[in-house]
Image (tube, rainbow, N blue to C red; front, side):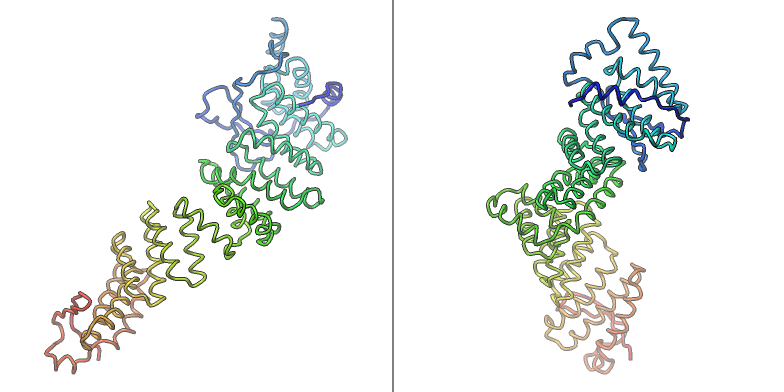
Length: 481
């Protein structure tokens, strides 16, 4: 970072006289998974109450001026440590005006001593800038904030990813017109931190990118490239970030919604189809293209489905199978929809999800009058959930209609209605959520049952057991006349 020291001292040594404000930084517990010295960093406008832990371990070489971080002499070191203690006391009681004066002194004398000096700067400078009585000095305070973060990156190289991310954030907050700087700092931070990028960076970065597009300084392909940079970070943290996963999901949703008016299906086709044609085996490219189609909601785009099929062929996973199944279902291709619902169930390890996918396949099969297939999928549901009312309803209907083609005897064709009614009743008893539908179907199927006169001539009487052998089911004779 290039820091002009003459400008630095002009900015950092402007006297500020202000009353103490409300404390901005909450006392939050440190992340126990980080072993070495840590500093809890909380954005002054943070709403999530999620601490950001930044390691200050020295792994990268520090500047030569940091060889004696506490000053050249023992006396200087003692004075600096004493001033740090006083600064901390001022911070504890929110005396930001007096803390500011001491912070200036420490920054000029021992900029390499502690990262807390720069952490405190964020709180001090943003709190003072928020006070009406400091309105005339607000921009100078912001400049001091930006320079202090540049200094942190210089004197604590391991914190460069954090510092550049914060620069992107504060610039987006206080100087949004400087979108090119925000983009530069955001990219630097994400390149260094990768999946560990602080949550405020992707939003700040994408806001700047969209401002650049609005001002005709960036084109759509550059916006797509920017989104490609943040998307893996969002995806990782919205699925693997523990306690903060839901918060990351909100960030991901907000960014996707802001991108949706820009991401047109035709633009994605124009930009990426030539690239896919040139690199047909590039699975990472295909993943990125699929991500764009999803964000733009181009879920009925044949190019999207073709790319998704390619990905599934290389690496089968249940979510892709489900997506393909839904596409084919929407396009009334029951055979392929069921093929992928079945694959989704087979690839899934959660029994509840397996039940969901097999039931979807059974319902689609029934809708398409594929009764044997509907029965097969419903039986798979019953193997996982023996009291699933929806599966029992499907089995009942399927059994009856299978009998209409499988049974040669006319009486057995009608006796299959008794079998169906048995299963409707079982569904009603086992699953209250389908009880009303089951009773309605019982009333509907009674008219299909054999009548007493026909049964009499076959020597069959009410109450006896009857085997409908053509469908492998036994039922009880009863008449509904």
